[in-house]
Image 1 (cartoon, rainbow, N blue to C red):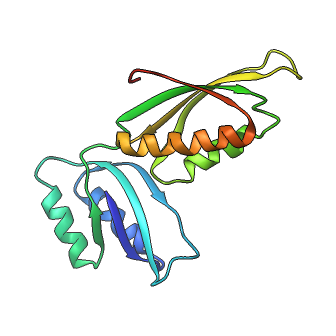
Image 2 (cartoon, rainbow, N blue to C red):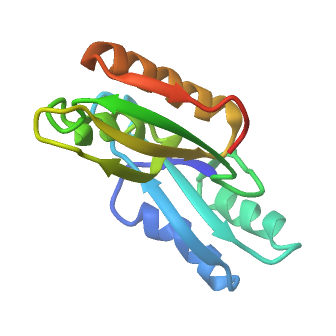
Length: 162
């Protein structure tokens, strides 16, 4: 779910409590405060598992609390795509590259495995990006392509789904 709520103390707990009260399982919460946002509102993404038939009750509780539900999906992070990066990954700050994907709020780096043959030799890494839909994975891959151009890294993309 993607929710919009007042940016004030206690609002996040108020959004999570009904899920818990219904016996739901909260799997992840993405809560980023945007200092540029106007209106004192905050977007929060919640991934949870709830029993069938409880969604309408949960949505009703949110409405009564003044929490707007912007999006409801069945499951999050269903789509994964792996790519290979080749170049001076450490020298060009691989953590910065990862942050550019993770900070989007709609995709994240799920796995990273790297081989570094020698200090002055190019490294290679397999990176897996995950999101809830192919559109957002493609948006994240577009960001990664831009970063690769900027950092002079080679990207090898899969021709088939991962």
